[in-house]
Image (cartoon, rainbow, N blue to C red):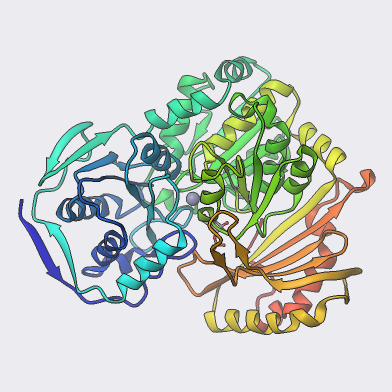
Length: 544
Ligand code: G1P
Ligand code: ZN
């Protein structure tokens, strides 16, 4: 084996964000850029000598090229084994499943999630630890510190690995095992849900399922599990062939970007259940015929119905949600008498709670739900969860959600994103708003009294680590909230996210249009934070 030590100099922009390092492909294509980050990652870990690394990605442009570089660097750095999805493909949840199942030391996942793909679009890389979850902050901080001082990296000078052939190969002294990207994950899903009941549901002519893979990674997973194993009609999975540019689309499963699915679900004769997943397969959107389920409600409804699902029928230890996610799950947790955790944005904050069995289900408003079966959010898992609920309850999606609201009240919820605004304007807006917060307490806004107003800080109950500066929040006496934070995943300027929530218990007011129901809080937030005035934007880029 010829291991080369290559001299390099640091790049100053390699700080991992909410979910790893995301940049334009052209940034990653700079000489040594990817290599610096990979070496900085390996250097941040305890000895990698003799360990196993899982590698795979969402198939976007640059995926295979990056896999080859990572494998050659892993071999040069002393990993003894690599497990790689065929053609370099692994959905994020499948990667998490495989790290856990094969007791790997960790994994490198190549993805920029739902961000568009292609030569001029985005690429991303993140490291997951041995529990299958995203590296915690102390590791991402160490990676970043290493990127600032790096002066050399190690790589072996060998031919590329044949990524297309399942089986074992040698790369220097490292064994590379190419595996089917779907089978381990499919087996895990079959162990969690009542596949028999779901098969019966899908065999019923009055039930139709539509799953939009948005030309991204979940196509093969959806076809195998939904169509082949569960017997959904062929054609259930649409846009099911992963493309390196995701078909030019923006594979984010929401009402704006999953337009083809949304149009079908809001037309006459809509399917019974519609769902979509994102670029790397960890997000999900759930729709009924002419009905949209907010991700926050989806988490609450999953928690309330978990006893119907084989894997969770023994009960939940707790529910966890990110801070901006609506408080709908809290009400279920209260009724079930289980713990409820409010964490900062990003899946990595759920890892400790799951490992310590302090929570079973987790979710974020950003179309992400998951459980203790892996340590990532999981798009197809959420679809199967809903299928299993529908198979048991034999009601429509709308009926289930409406009943839930009658029982628990409804948390009206929306998120307004202002994308690609100049970074200095965005950070000034946040600084100025933060300065106003203390004086807001006790004041009346949008007809409600402000109960608290602060910059969210989280103390992890398991390891006591503190994550501060996690978003500005204004909470009202009636349960309403206004939250603002800056995105940690964007690649262009800053993205300001405004989250608005109100709580309604009056049975006659449970079916209002969301933006209308929240209008007073939306305007109050705009006046307070001066969003329109400072950004010059008349409207958000995306409303979810
Ligand atoms: C966004 C979402 C967040 C999610 C992350 C990764 O991060 O808001 O909930 O965990 O993508 O999928 P943000 O851009 O807001 O930092
Ligand atoms: Zn994703």
